[in-house]
Every structure is written in C-alpha cells, then in structure tokens.
Length: 255
Ligand code: PEP
Image (cartoon, rainbow, N blue to C red):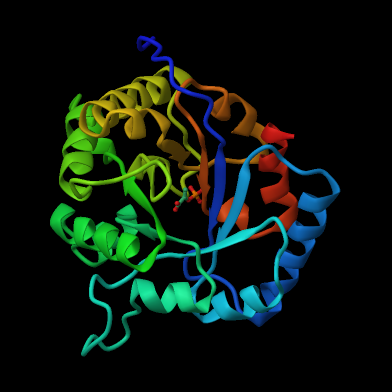
C-alpha cells in the first residue's frame, strides 16, 4: 500500500465522457440525469462532456446540477484549422471544462505532452477548467514503468501555473479504458499518491487541493470501492456515462 498523504477535503467530480457517441436522440438521457441528480443530490460535482455537436443543445436544456464540458480543443483561439474547435468556442457553446490529452487523442492524433500542455493553457485562457489525462499502457505497466510514465506525462503536459480551480488530473490506465478491466485498489492508490506528491511539489497548496480523478471501466458495481481510495477525488467515466441510469448508479458512491 502506498503511504497515505493527508490533503484538504476536496469536493469530488464525476465527469462523463461521451466520446464520439450521441445524437439529438440521446438528449433525453441528460434530462433523466438532471431529474435523478436533483431528486437526490450527490456530494460530488457532476459533468457531461458530449460531442461538440451536442454541446449547445445540451446547454439549451439548462441542465440544473449537471455542468458541461468539451472533449478536446485546439490550442489557438481561431484560425485555419479545419474541423477543430477552440476553447473559446467551447466556452461560448456552454462548456465549463474541457478534457485534454485523453489517451485516445494521444494515440489517434499523436498528441505529445507539449501539445497537451498548449491545450491546457488554451483552456485556462478561455476560462475553462482543463481535465488533463495521463495513463500507462499495459506494456508499460508490465515493464514496471507506470509511475515513471504518468509522472513524465504530468510534468510535460501541465504549464507552470495551475490552480485547483482551473485544473483537474485524470489517471486513466490505457488498458482499463473500455476493457472492463480495472487496476487493483492498491495499484490505484499507488499511482494517485505519486500524482498527489508530484502536484504538491510543483504547485504547493494548489497541488494539495487539485482533484485527481480515476478513469477506466468505472461502473456502478465498482464505483464505491474505487472512489474510496485515498487521493481519488472522483471519476472520468466513458461507456457507463451514456445511460443516465448507469451514470447515476456511479454517482451513488457520493449519495
Ligand atoms: C474514458 O475513455 O475516459 C473512459 C474512462 O472510458 P470507460 O469508462 O469506458 O473505460
């Protein structure tokens, strides 16, 4: 077991990443989630990050108790980047946050730590909270490189100035995403403790208050156990965020 580090009480965040899923027909899931969240309010902040095409439509629903986020942004404010979206555009469409450096973007689009750092800076410039993802591959875990990998990603992907308000870290082991596999509690605890230490070393008190989410096959059945691990301050949820019933099942860990 990793050494426990005492940190201030941190309000958790449970964020749903819809990835490239959802058309107008799925907007009803958000309405169902809003109803559930307002019937019994979880102690965690709740967020949905839909595809950009649904962001302003979700925002128009004025989803009380459910904040909205984007899934990626270009580092520039505007310009000749066909198909891209700036952090300012996400903010304008109703986002409060944006996921950056998700392993699927790092893999599918070759995003380097440097590119991710520029996106974190763009999020901050636009007044969005950056949810910055780190995580090791199965090969790296098997080689005993997990801590080295996530610490290097953290170092390279965050700008010099970050606060607990404008930055959230998500630890997502690549091999746990969408696979139904999860690390053991001891493995999650070890990585989150190492991330907390690195954040505190770099950002002092702000690093102590920063949320570190766990992501990778979080489901209603394992949420309570995973969310009880020290230094786990919420979850980034993919597949199980698409249905209000499943997502609210995960939020039960905070009810
Ligand atoms: C994710 O992609 O951020 C994620 C955690 O996916 P899943 O919950 O489906 O593993």
